[in-house]
Length: 419
Image (cartoon, rainbow, N blue to C red; front, side):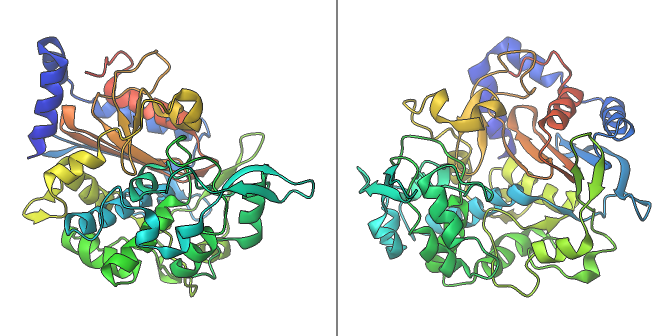
């Protein structure tokens, strides 16, 4: 089944593109040199890159340290925090329940989470900064929640610029002290930033997906993922709730200052950030894993829902998730920073490349690829055209897209046409 994506893409691209695609063999030495230079130039402290192609591991390259202060190298066994690379896992969990007939993609969200029945759209604000709202022109659907078109916000990181985000700041829906049920009740009180279906806006919608998993399955979200994704795929090193026992394998996160120096996040901050002993399990973040474990998940995606004899999703479901779902009326100006991801759109919890790179500066990649990344500069992508998965692991914040541009150039070569 893995070949079906590639066959379809090649047929659409034509004979010349098929010849080009078949000839691509990533240069492991070039990948190694690239990540070595990232470390040597002080752009990150440590990194690894794993390339799986044509049914086998092609490259595993590593450079620098997982913990500079302890002189501990970045290895295959290093645990990393993937942040938003959690989101595709949540989407897969929810789409398993769709396959079971638990919901329809165009069901109003309120049919399954009644707290969203009275959602409002912020259309202005009063002199005191509180929102002026009105009922949305149509209901938010589950499809909207999967593709970031519901109009939800993610907050503004303590610096709200609009009335809706001020409500978020007051209610703190994603506080680690809340359960997913409590998160959802609070989230439903935050006004929408936009009319449903009119904008792509990155949001806490994936945490709403996690709450849907709980309600539709009758299981706690983390337990559901463990039983239906991690355990079947053999991802024994993956999960949300961690402890001090993991510290000897955990890569530190390093924060870049204005002058470019990289300072480590403290271990106490890590334990607090991972909600040790607290109830929140986010759908949009929080998984700690290894490159080998996450490769199993990514290979399942490349295999159209299957890894070996284990089927996690049906091929048609995976293809639906990896197809651009955005209405063409949502133009570039209404897609926020998604346009910076490349020439493409958005499926269900994935960026989807729909055309070859348009400029030399754009990330290299193939038509039909789908991917996502994570705040500490983590990245993975699935390239069906090349029968390839790549995982780039590092732990640097703020998010550094230049690392992704450069690792893609090392994998594909600077002149790869993308089809």
